[in-house]
Image 1 (tube, rainbow, N blue to C red):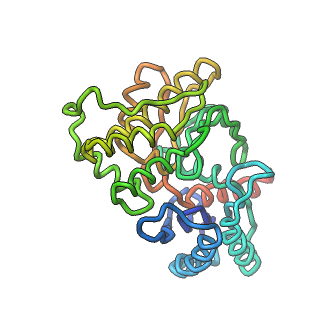
Image 2: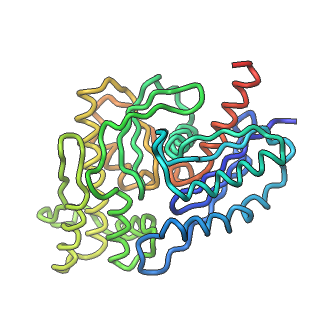
Length: 323
């Protein structure tokens, strides 16, 4: 009977549970988006925490296998730093500790960011990345480029570039909601942008990037997008130009960082990086860089618990080998 690892993640906007076996077969991987009232752009932490407490039993009752669970791995904090904290992760931690006590399973606390990285590696085909590689984590709560050092379980992450104001996901959500999309607006904005014909957009219409060294600002892009809408530019064109500006900003930052840091591979994670328009532009911009670019499908880019389940299995295997 194969051992199983259970992953739990309670992020800002998704309650997630995943189950993986010793061969890294993803037996279960589901999430429930937190509800945000129409027209609003976020949730208070207390409201998000309440919804996680409600969602976790719903997701866990669908699991048909429990006795074989050897490890429960959960997100305890946003980043792999001791002072990193966010109340929403207490819901997952509480459930994981309770279940581990009942099942006699081991517990492993990791960070939400490590969860994203491990899931993205799995989703991109588990490539043999170097011991040190670059990773992009662009979401509603984070917009960072990291220098990542592999550990036996999890990762050490050094921020080498980041937003100075808005996160990329916040930018997408704010303009998406302004155009009538529900929050979170990423999928709807991509659908809208796909209605535009890039070759037909007036070349004078541009949403430009603002850089500060290798760091970047997204508030300027928000203002530019608002102005385009105010003067009557069609919404699909504004949506496309906005996604293009994110991709151009990211590509420029990666290109500049490559000159300073000796990484060969770039791993992309976070909900924003599941956007296919952004991916296509980034691949085009960096096609002559000599870098290896690793993207993963949306289910492993967006918030999920797959990375935690996989790290839990990594932990189980290391224990079994006596490491």
